[in-house]
Image (cartoon, rainbow, N blue to C red):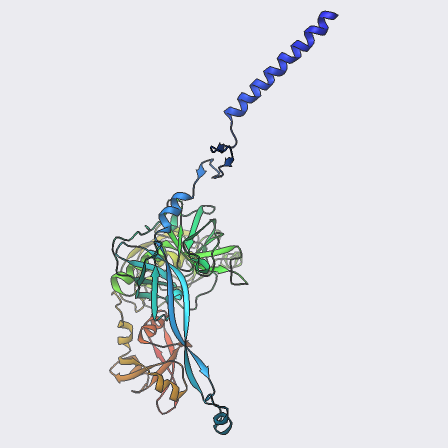
Length: 481
């Protein structure tokens, strides 16, 4: 009995020691976190994210590459503010208040992405719209004056340029390859906070939020939860390789500040628009010539369609690319060059990547049978030619000039361009006389010839032209394009 009293405690001690030893070895062989200590013995925990595949995700590489290719865009414009007073109470009493315009400077701020070493910068059109002065601040704090190369309101994109070489720039990535749940970084200058980087995931693709007002508007946004605020517009959305996959453009918010979701124009659209503007001065917009709608469960049942895939063709335009190859009303477009399209936004996104005269493969569902067509896309006029700057205005058959401030004030209008000389063309055919001042087209204000081109390029069919003659007679004209 005495021996047992001595041996049992010794045996328990040995067993306990073995348990502690093997447990410590197991913990070391399967570490869950790493703690590093500096010379002063203060512990530092290195945190990181891991993907579903268990691979470590590091944001520092993409941030370091992209932050130098994103610039701060500062704009200055002059807006007219109404003033109904002489500035003298006695005059106002006897003669009544008088209308005049007072110019007030308006400062703006946004972001841009350097896309070439010789100074071409991609940004949002709304960042530089109507700006009289554009200043670009690089990440190294150098400043440059920039000039506008071209704009495309239908996609809210613009190209500006600074005179400098050997600039750091961001390479385009392929937004078609972006996957839901993929990590992305938003780089820009929110609230004038230079070179700000935020992280998030892609939460949706081909999102339409109805912020553009144009027949040719293209909304197929990449939706993310990376924090974007005022000043981020025109900045970069990059993947973890530091490639440009989108241009940050909008947020969904009731307050004007970030509330959980942000939206970026896919690089597949942005790259094509940028190259068109740089090469041609205008976006070369390809037209298929169909009116489309969402294929809902109700429409599928109504038309006895078995699979809820694709986009439904509602109408075929006359003498269009679609009519030429034999597409029909009721056909369902399934794929464009092998890429599935299941919403109007996705179809518009794919077509927007091409130019007139490009050939594409279209897969359709007709009466539950798959058919394949090769289609040669056309431009908005129905042919295959390249559209050059001012070409659309020339089709109108007129020489135009901006109206000076004195005439605007005398006629009581805020904007307009005047027809100074008429030739054979659409305006003359429509009954417009020389001297007529065009103020609005399809209810959109017109302030200069460039804006006229942009509006007409985004419209099709007939347009309503509003304006006034120097005599004060207001007139309206409907013309076909």
